[in-house]
Figure 1 (cartoon, rainbow, N blue to C red):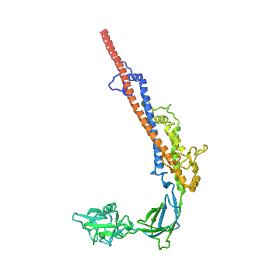
Figure 2: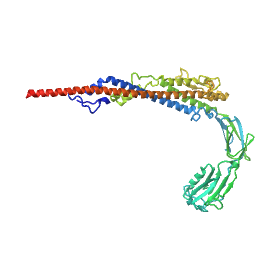
Figure 3: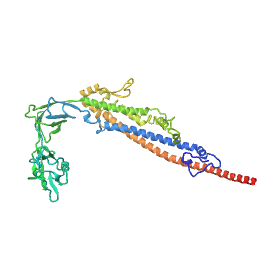
Figure 4: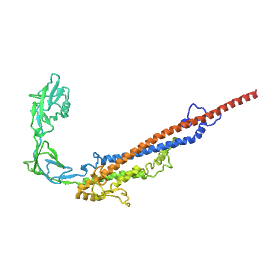
Length: 513
């Protein structure tokens, strides 16, 4: 009889076995090759283990990289290297008006600040001389109307080339009658050379062209080349030439007169936004009180430590996880075929346990991260415990082994010597000596070291996997050769049995005759 057995060496459809012997030749050949198949299975299991190890390493590396990007990169969403993390301020004012808005950042002076606004800045601007629509209300219901369809008191005429042609501040523009009003405005307003904003107001039924910057030195220069968009008796009601009617803002800040070409500017870490003139009003001077907001810094540091504790918990869990791999090696294909999906899942959960147990790179990472809090930082000669960061007690079931923040101690340290606290976190650099490095640079270096080591480990495993594939290929070739030899011998046996059967049949026929 013939039989089907899994495995390339035993499943050739060109073989017809057991016809005369009635033996399960495939099964017998497979059993005879058990030793060789076992060598292949062991290599495949080793390959699977390396693949699983790479998956586990890649997963935890992703966690480490995310933490590093969020907290130790200047551009991170929760960066601990940005000055704004440590320099937060509360700005209060008794004023109920909004004539001046004040905000503070790193370098701001603590105490009282007074502001009197004598003049607001205005950029040069030119506006239609009067209503420009045919009905005295609006030139179109919406800005998607084409220029050729605008209802204007002085209808638009286009040049000999069929376009409106003009320049603003030296930049030339050209629009056809099929150009929409909005497209024309967008094109002009997005041009950096023209550097103006052109608007149509349905409230006043006028066009306005305003310089985007410059204050008293700003200007709007318009020339008309084709059509009648601008000029005397133009469709838009705006003449040609240069308009210079801008002015600077003038304010008296803490007794000093400040003139700028904008209503918003920053001086010594203080950002001023002038909204209304106060001179000559019942509240000529607006007072502000600026104070450091240490609660924001404390909150940021606590968030950082919570995230670090979360990452350390994952790292320590991986390096201390119990391994059942010795009793649950990766399944062979033959074993998988005899098991249900649930059984395979349960088995592989055990097989994947402890993949990174005592992993040297992760162990080093955990040790380096924790050591950062027990060594002097930022050139202060002090450790993190001086600002309220310690390790949870062995008897503390919730915080055992974790970094714990005493917010009161941190707040007191910030209030007494904020610059030193900042230096303990961000002092030095990645290349400074250990005692000069702030906590964040120590941690950043530890994370970078692990990321490089993990990448090297994955590459080394990939090389091992490639070597195993070559070894399996060689072993498989040998298995195929062995199977062919055994099949050849069984074939010879079947041939002999065939001859014997033929002879027996011949002799029987002789006796019968």
